[in-house]
Length: 319
Ligand SMILES: NCc1[nH]cc(CCC(=O)O)c1CC(=O)O
Image (cartoon, rainbow, N blue to C red; front, side, top):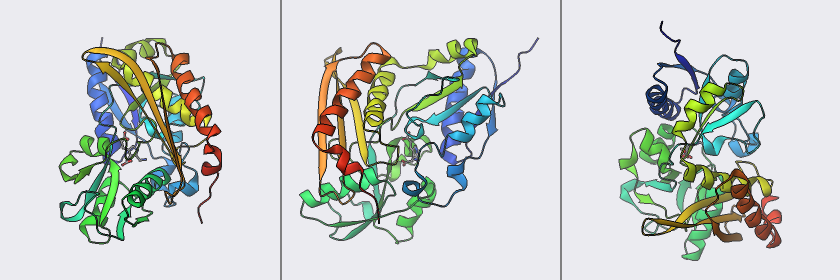
């Protein structure tokens, strides 16, 4: 008797298809079952509005979750940074695999690094988080850049540079890796210059919470350290009451002594999009061993950031 193929719900973008294809192979290996991709269109794929305007929260995810809840697909793969922080009781975050490079990168004309950009350079990004930190970095170096809000898939965004319309665009390294275009990066921005979005570079594999066999099988793809890190990052975001299009960066990493894992450090930043005010803080604690401990790390840092005025910065509205 042959078991039915598992149905993986995925968006159709090149990036989504690449990451779903990679997860499909891994799931086939751990379950011994074949995996069939089911393409689903989300609001984020069809809307032409800027993400900062449509709110961001869940626009790439809701249609996939609905298909899971209706039993039309067995599991779904999301970019973790697109996943709203509130988790539905009916769905399980069954696995968070090992994170890919979390950094933001610059793809600029003529091989330029960020420090080599000319004064007034036009840099495309629709992300208030990137705008705030890029403008802040430029200010610190006596440079002004113009951040230009853009949307579209990775090909479209890099296309603005190739056509000469923009001097550069800022993207996530992970996405470029996954679609095989990492060679086009002209500068990898260190996380201390531009903190990534909470969960950036990580994937989320979701399935129905009551599908116990599948929850258990998918758990084999989970990386506990990645899960602890992204849980702390997302807890910070939630405790700041910010959505995924807010100017909030967060990154948790492991402080190790040789091979010995010592502590987890969580860094967070909130700022105005012009980069004139940035609140960046970090906290360090034992590596979380439970979900609650990882959540506590994020809440702790959020409280410190709020005490330093973070709420006022996030309240800023774009004109
Ligand atoms: N919101 C779009 C999105 N969602 C996930 C990624 C990249 C891959 C990742 O962060 O895992 C991107 C593109 C980008 O920010 O350049």
